[in-house]
Amino acid sequence: MMKVRMVVLFLVLFFATSVFAADGFPKSLAGFTLGADVKEYANLCDLDKAIPVSDDPFLTEALLKGESMAGVRGGSLTFGNCKAPGKLVRIKLKFYEMDQELFDKLHSKYLTLFGKPDRYLGDAFKNVIAWEWLFKNDKNEEISLVLMWSRDQDIRPGVSIKMTQKTLMDEEYQCYMSKSDRAGRKQHRTKIRSLDAYVPR
Image 1 (cartoon, helix red, strand yellow):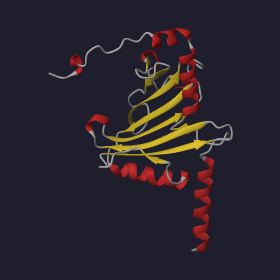
Image 2 (spheres, one colour):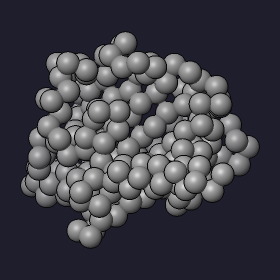
Image 3 (cartoon, helix red, strand yellow):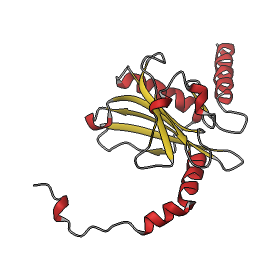
Image 4 (cartoon, one colour):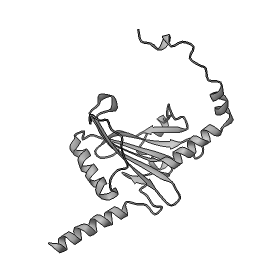
């Protein structure tokens, strides 16, 4: 029995350490690698239909093609368009299997590999359950990993994973804000003259 336990412990530790890239934190998810050129995955996403992210115009998002990955019903690849155009900064995956059981299995695996999450992002009523792990390496680069399950119709019910290279995203934002035309546009934003137009009738 002791030998069996030692073998199991060895396998868990081996897998736990192998998920971290050479630069100190996990970078890959389902075959996609943060920081890589999005063109490497052109066969899996609709690059020709990629559009800027509405609230983050310094990023561009391409939807994953349907049936391109086993068990995945949707998702997207988000990449920079300012400092390093085409560099992958975020991976989103949503699964066909929508039961909380899949979430629980993934959550258990994440706990084994990464330890306790850094914070809870879901709601108090557990309509949305979301845990975030944050990873930093010796270069002070940061990656966020969010595992979520939702039964809220407004947040696309089911299980999803979101993995973000926050350092690369911040660099894209700083690049965007440093451009003179962006700064000028920010200074000349119009102000709301009356709240009446924004009250439903």
